[in-house]
Length: 272
Image (cartoon, rainbow, N blue to C red; front, side):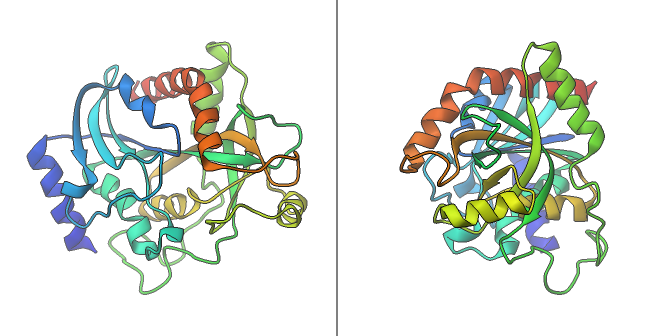
């Protein structure tokens, strides 16, 4: 794993020498944020050693280096999912690569279904915690002591100071954000109404098929993590509608300006 990471990082540094301290993973339908990046260099996942192609619509499969204001960033425009048939080491390889490049703060974003009935499609939710319902963990197997401890603490998996920074950025821009718990499921099927009711009972506010493995891997390495979910639909059984991936992408695009403004301001404050 260490050799693979070193090889991938060396390729990126050869394309463009960089020292980003902030990394961003863009979820389904949220990739247009890259239009805000200045001095950007785009590297296709196809060209990065030990990377995979993205197979999900709405995930462009590009790594972008550049700046948000004075802050140097690296962005993953698209991610890998376990439901694509990939082992967990491959799913979190990009997260570990960001750390290898120097990233200390990781912002995870995703499209999610709303479980909390006080939410509406189009809401942006600051993730305060997660529930791992995937039945998988990227740290299973021999521990890589060079990365982190055998039993990493997850009591502050989503950094409280970063959560406050996102909230204050949104407030100063005149936006309201929700705060809630993200349930990570395996997919690729959407949840049944019974599963959604179960998730609500155990404390979940939103549900999606990503983010949790990346958060675990990032905490293992020692990165600070914050997460933002875009509620692109209410979860199964709450509204009498058929869930479709194309509708989720459309809803993400509808809130792109709000999402972009909050994320830009947050990154600038982290850099400051």
